[in-house]
Amino acid sequence: MEITVAIIALLVSIISLIASFLQPEIRKWFKKKFFRYKLNFIAIDNLILFFNRAGSYLRLSVTLQPPNDAMTIKNVAVEVKNCKSGDTRILNWSALLPLFTQNFGSMSLESFSQAAPERILQDDIRTLKIEFSDVDNQRNEKLQHLTNNIINRVNTLDLSQETKELVRELSDSTEIASLKNELSEDFFWKAGTYTLDVIVTDSLDNEYSRTVYFDISTQEHESFRKNIDEFFVCEIKQRKNQISSFFTAIKNFATKTLKNSSN
Image (cartoon, rainbow, N blue to C red; front, side, top):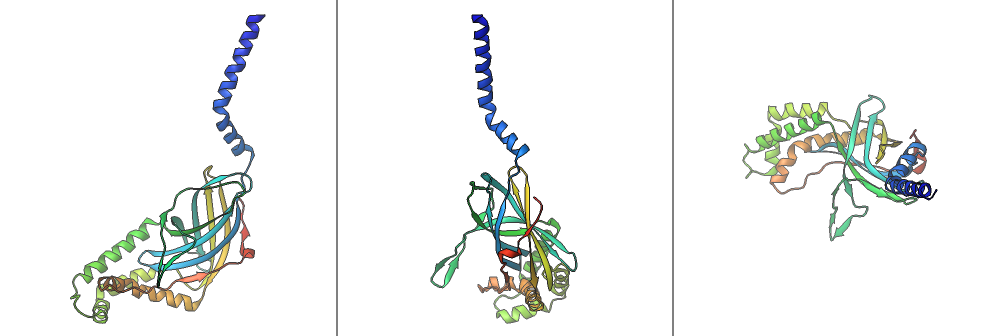
């Protein structure tokens, strides 16, 4: 009898020991199997649209809250679609920006950090200011090809000339005119209505998405088109220690524009 009790006690101890080692994994499996984390999109705002030497990309502020439990944000991506043409771009987070810009006299300073997983505690609210860049390798290689050709052409110019004369000489090149046509064919920010899907992926590979809409006016489109010319002369301005001037469009959304999507 005593031996039986001892054996039972030993088995209980072994089971307890094993359970103590497995408990975090069991808890993780149980939550993943039976509980679906919910992610609140508190706000999506301060959208800035860019077109410059890095192509078409954007910045966006996203405010998130996980009410059920702490969670790790593994990735944030956006899918932008032109509602008329159906042309779609998928952009992935590439950098995190500070929420506030530091000003030093007449200069402002923004410090970028590489996008990395973000831990948000239970019932905490976190605002992420994110820069999203194009993930399409073919388009990125095309932009690099165009940039390399511009640099090679600028290297043949007499840089002792005035900027205006250098720009005229570069613009008169038939090679540059052909490259401009290539860039125009791939230009994304056109007048019309767009959907912007914000897609958040957590550490368990669950996806959560919300959609907002924004418009690009005809005037904004025309201003963006001027960035194509600036794309080709910014190398000259850089050599001359002059600042390039690229147009950007800023969009703000009210909370009511958030549209629920299935998690």
